[in-house]
Length: 173
Image (tube, rainbow, N blue to C red; front, side, top):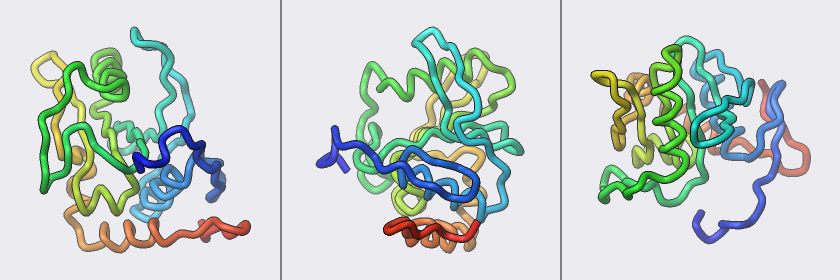
């Protein structure tokens, strides 16, 4: 979606949530269908790099899922990896700050695109604490790895991608 940089996302209703974009709404559908209880943009955090409002807090995984628009993951795709940029982009710096500052957060999964993109290309970076220091794992889905390896993940990802919100349509919660 590099071609659409600078164009505002469309706020989208799904279930009890008003998501900031359709990509976030599709993640809401995916997580809901997979049976995960989540909070959407529930609590802002004050970090050394500034204020941060996590997209999804997945309770049972103690994981934040941060959703970025589809397009170019800083580390490329699983089929075409690239060297990670130095310094890391702002969303990765925030993820590093969160895992460093909060023992309640075991992982921050930064995703680039909707769940189908992630299922297909693993365009994600998982940030965790290891040996007292934050570490980035490229093309790693962290606590969601098991889900994405299941047959159901493909069905959930396709269902999320097929969800239509045009003309007031709302998928069933």
